[in-house]
Length: 147
Image 1 (spheres, rainbow, N blue to C red):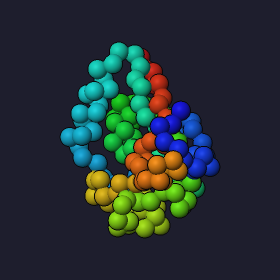
Image 2: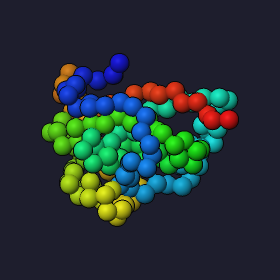
Image 3: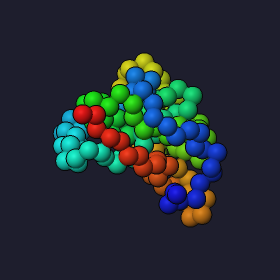
Image 4: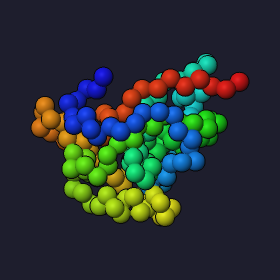
């Protein structure tokens, strides 16, 4: 269940994907990743985490870079991903749209990473008529640590 009302055709797939199939477009803040890793390690056998949002056509990460790197460092080969119709008009790169969607995709595919938190993707909420953080399209996943 989602906390906003959005065009349901935005979400294409929800599954576990091999982390090698995903392409980040931003660098991460090492301290933030380390804090997330320590937090996730504090759980015993499993964790619950929001899925990483990716463009359904390119598999470039749109939201969840720190989650992605933390899960990789924890040894997860497969990570939870929600693929979305990134080029929909109901998604924008941030309130000012400093970067085009094409330039973000190219950054990821060409490994020319933007600075951390360069983008702040938003999704249009049909009910409130306001732009909301795109992470609200994520789903929660339970992942088990391998012993």
